[in-house]
Image 1 (cartoon, one colour):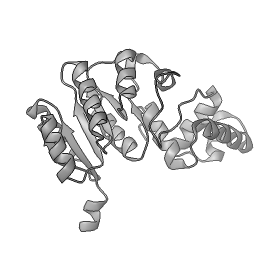
Image 2 (cartoon, one colour; image 1 turned 180 degrees about the vertical axis):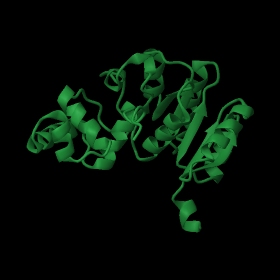
Image 3 (cartoon, rainbow, N blue to C red; image 1 turned 120 degrees about the vertical axis):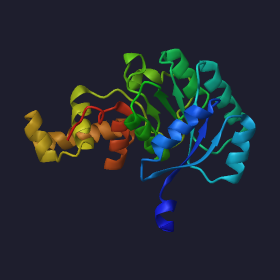
Length: 227
């Protein structure tokens, strides 16, 4: 039993509305690999939780103002909080998302997202990646990290534009198809599948299927996959 608890992703919930935090805690309690280890509604609460609780991810509910999230991210940076932060926000403008990423957010989830998307975000960030909601202004992930806006967090997947065929091959790999199955679906030979995979992997800096799956989570590929 102790071993199972140690494998859980330990999450801190932060925001100014206790009722929202309670709802998030209830939602996440349904996941066997996620455990909420604390809730806080002030910066003092956050510092106390970080100092006294072992945690892996901090989920920040930004309320009704984009400034709330940015203020918290600035506070987290100044205090050197060791926990990666995921912002849950109602704001989808690219400017706000850019600012959140530059200020240190490792994940950005819209409030209209599904619970499945939120769980994907937590797992992706815990794995060392960056999660961006696929519905942000209807823009692809690649458009949301332009040059000059700061470096991506260490350990994050590099965001690069893939050729359509490279992206399709990577998407099918993430969804669990074999090279032969992909070749049959796309009408190409297995050797071409491996070539597209190799090129895409080199662009993104992903060297394992787990990382490809993580990239798929960031892109929202699993959202519409029913089997």
